[in-house]
Every structure is written in structure tokens, then in C-alpha cells.
Length: 284
Image (cartoon, helix red, strand yellow):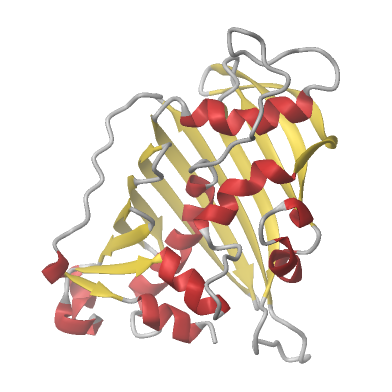
């Protein structure tokens, strides 16, 4: 990544974008309180938390969707913004999209939790073997970064578990809004990090809670999801005051056209350079 000045920045931001996409993958609650027999959200008092928790399942049941997203990251006086547009398989997490970042457009595919990005032709000389594609295996990267194979905030499985940390007392209805002409209900929730499967590790990076906003349509599906977090470096990265570096990340994703066609395929192996190990090295 460090050897790819332009594409590296786009890749890093693209992986951050992936957090929002993967929040729907394989998630859901064990039960479905607060649902009517027809699957719609109950409107009785005290059911706001249940409506948000079950929204992840309701959205995944749509199978596929068109998506747009924006991720803004700032750290050490610098900032980066990425805008993405594409389609996603809401059950498997596979996706195809075009990401605009660092003044360029990058084609990205996600297949089986592996991110593939096409390198601009003028930068391919910096890629091992001058390959046109690079890839990052998110599961392998998460294991390398933790040493013991445990997940962290960049692990899609952990992002998918957000619903487990949403409680009734930390959920409130903000109001109603239209998104692309669709009526939605806006909820603000606080995710209790301790309730997540790797809460102890995540807590050291993001603190005890994560704020999240979701907008649900009348079928209980997520139309917009917004997460703001401050991530603290865990190993060896400090600023000039010898305190751990922090990065602020704002991510917003919107879904539409549920049921749209999705065809996400990995590029040929002989045209792909694996940067997973390099990514891990730059984070230590």
C-alpha cells in the first residue's frame, strides 16, 4: 500500500467504505420481537429498538440492492473522502462498485470477503508483477493484525454484529423523512460495544459505544445507515504529543432498487497481486 501513492489511498478508503456494506452481512437477532404477523414493524411504544435490530434481517431478505455510499476520514490534520456507487448481494456481502477517491475512479469488487481493486494503468509499474488488479483478504488481514486471528473493527463479521449491541433504552425515534421519494423513519441508536463478540478489543479502539443512525422504510428495511466513529491506534502509532493516533471516520450508505441483479466475480488470479501482507506491515 505504501508503494502505491494514489491507488493505495483509494484502496484504504475503499476498505473503510466496506464497513458500511458488510454491516448487513450474516447479521440478525435470534428472535424477532416487535414484528407483526405480516413482517412489518410494530408501532407500539417501546418497540423502537426491536424495529432497528430486525431491520438488518429485513434488509438482507431483499437479497440484493443498488447502493451509494460516502466515507470521510480525517487524521493527523489530513482528510480523505470516497464516494461509491454500485450493487450488493445483501446476504453474501459480495458487491461491485466504482469508488471515486483521491481524484480518480477505481473499480472495486468484493467476493467472499476479499476486496479486489483495478489499478490505474499509469500506476501498474508500482504493483508487484505489474498486475492490473490488487487484492486484500479481509479475513486474513484481521487475523494478522490481532496475532491470534480475532476480529476487530475492520472485520466484516464484527460489523455484521452491530444489531447485538442495540438496546431499547439506547434507541430513539428522531422523526420521518423522505429519501429518494421513499417515506422513512429515522432512528438514532447507541451500539453497546461490550455486547459485541469482541467487545473488549473493540472498546480499546472506539470506546464503550458507537453512535449510529438508520432510516427504515415501511417494510422495515434500511434505506440509509450512518456511522460516526473515532478509531484509536492500538500498537505503536502516536502523534507528536506521544499519545495514540486517532482517526475520525464518517460513513453513510443508502440502498435502493431492491432485487437488482448482482454479478460479482474475482478477476483472474494471474492478473492479481495480493497486498494483504503489505497492508498488515503498514499497520504495525
